Image 1 (cartoon, helix red, strand yellow):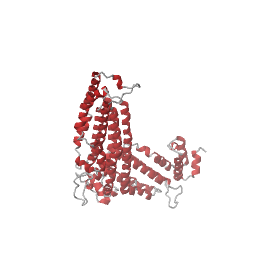
Image 2 (spheres, rainbow, N blue to C red):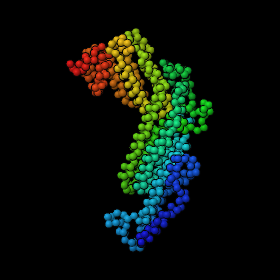
Image 3 (cartoon, rainbow, N blue to C red):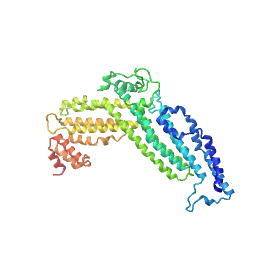
Length: 517
């Protein structure tokens, strides 16, 4: 009785905040979910006003007011001679008083308001999403910066409450929102909505050449380049001042510019947003850890640091989505431009004599043509996508290229003039080895990835293909000149097939040599 009467003084102080803000925050804890269902509600919400109230609930002034209320309650207990030990049970656990419940209720309201504010801010950010088409260097739209600014602020003010339980609850909500609502509305949906528009853009080789023409690269249009020749841009060197994707930012008539361009209309920006989101998740986790460390007065700090580790899973989800987008983009440019160049490999005859070899040295039938096509596509992609996405696509392309060339070798025959199956003469083997090394040098020059490792198997095959005698084959195995012993049985069998094609030994003989018989 006396304790309850004393606590009433503190509760009265604390409830001043709730009474004065109740009208403003009425039902706001449910507003975020409602906005996700019906975005038109945004027009009825003063988000700045809500932000101010949420900030006040977590502010130093609010925290001081709660402390003052608790202090008044304690003074009331002393004045009324209430035994302090009555606030604890015999087990030493705190008794949940009316005052404690009031404080917990306020913090519970704050957490729900914060979640609703985050959800509402995400919908507002996607509705106000913009691409600055006057800045070709800006590869992302506004939505990512807007959302992560709100998330950082939410973490910052949750920690200012000095209530780690509430801070952890806010982090849990942020993790859920990023994995669900943000990923769906701000990343997945724009990628899907803009996919067809970008595919249509890529179908126009002249758009790509027009985009990169500002480089003033003298190699554009020279050599065996089907994109430049087929589009009539073989001699285009005129610099332009448009955004490289400006042709995509047109209305249905193809001429009138769009009034507003968002990530839902520009697939490269949607993919860049996804890649940047993964980076920002890491920064969010690091900044949260730093903020918690700076507040030495916090109890349960380890619990908070453990909670923010959930953001690592969100980072993995965004990385996976980025990788999937890069894979899709590579497929589109491959089908449109690179596959025809790669298909030319099947039509090349590597059973050549010296005259044909000399002709191949002057008129490269495959490697240089493929490099030319790849270089134009790569130069365009570098204008519209971040380096992280470019590296992913280059890694995928090299994997597919080397696998394709390995299959080409493995389909060769140890018998000359066998109908329907290719045969490598020694000069043909040398030419193929030069093609492989030319491709290796090119991809090494345009990427920081460990490209050479991806060519290791193919280079080993080329070494075997160029052998002229059984003694050379035996020397390579005996000296460990290749890395074939590091591979599995299937790869060793493939090496035997290549060696057999090279100098007409049977596979049984090759196997005997390998076994030391």
